[in-house]
Image (cartoon, rainbow, N blue to C red; front, side, top):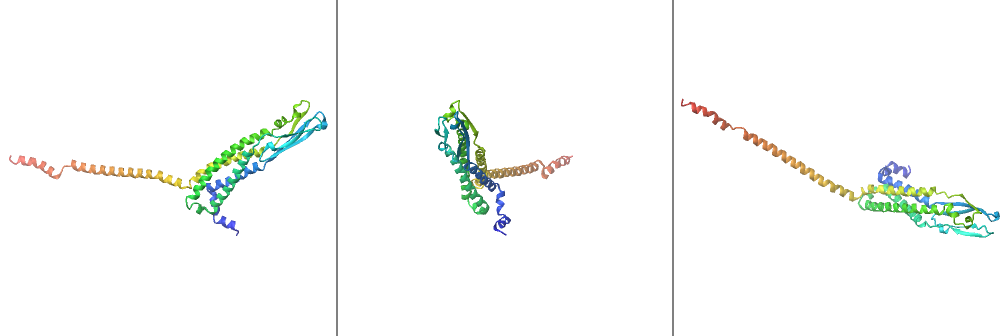
Length: 285
């Protein structure tokens, strides 16, 4: 039997059924999708400039761009429709900072999720041996939740700028030949942004996963157990004091009733004195 089968048969992977390890595994997968759909993107658009003089026309102007979206460095040449002269232009904008930050967060989140999943599966006893492991895990989870929120929001804004800068109508407005009504300019095809849209979705999904996992990691820390003890101690004291008061009240009630009954009932001596009264009165007669 191979080692993996032995570990599976021994119940080592049982930790994946717990929410803590299961969410870490999901975070690992979603992080892969996030940086793969953003960092692996390459796209482009194609334009057509049809001049009055057909020899000056260029019906296939390809403009390619890719991650990290430094669009101001993407240059292309277009005809001026004034002889064989060419005009060199560049796209507008730079979304590299938001894109690189997003991919960096995704890569480090993937590495940490992978390491944490391994610890949960193979070193769970050492992880729960003291409070240091869960405490570090809790702090890192909170930090990554914040980073996912900031990174996804920044990249969503950066993607919006990329879409505007690579819009064929926006690019055609940069070409001087297209400003002349006699020349015909048109977009052959537009860039496909579906994978970039998917990366933003996975970014916010990662934020939801990491934020939701904060509670399960917090339950492993000593802060949660100390809080449980703090809440349970006053309840136990209140319950014990209530039971003690009820016991004293019952004891006092039963004792008082018994003594009252004893005081109300006449004694044998008093009863004897009352019955002997008439006898002593009738004797002289």
